[in-house]
Length: 306
Image 1 (cartoon, one colour):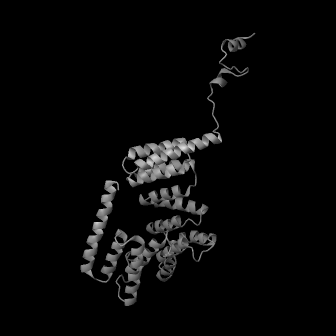
Image 2: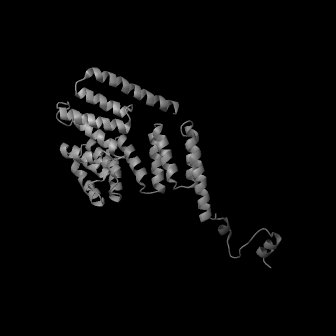
Image 3: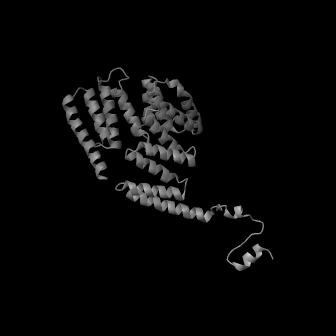
């Protein structure tokens, strides 16, 4: 009887496989997760996310720790990756947010929200070429991603690129949309394209089709007010001169107040712009004071964590 057989008898707790070398036995065994193990890991990740959300407003370090624990349980946990990146952004840590989004895209390639967030960060940091590349890559895959489409227009405009560079992406979005005439996101995108191309009349028509929508309506109202009040300085005029223009601005302001709230900073800003366009400087001063108070109120809530 050879040594291996004797060894097995002498140590009944050991299993010796004949033909296995010492190198084989020392190689770590990679366990393939079973469906039950995957469910348990997802449950643990969900618990970690809930704990992180609990600490999000009052203890950033603990929130970060628990989001990372969730990711350790499930590397492809989209909620943990995105929420952690947003937490970094909310606290001004743009570099960590960018790193987190890159990490996520390594585990979940072509994730739309992560791609848009990463491109937005590049845009804000002045890396316009990189941002354009990210938006275009996403639109090549998802032509109806209107948020990315409007961002692509903004970046190209700021970079001084002609709107003709964006036109193919707008055309693809129109072809991909089953209800292209009524889709709010597409109409807002059309309006923005027309505005940047200098066609104000067609821009207003497109924005008008989007202004009743819950997602795009407020942005469309603000864009229409920008045109009438010439906030960007791109349009001739900038002063409310006719009764029709005044009625239109007042109607849009009322809608904006109903949508955003009459005490919101957005509404107060546009109300001040409207009064300034009417050259009512006395009223502008009062509205400006209310607007500053609104900003202070928002800042106080942020500082208090409320």
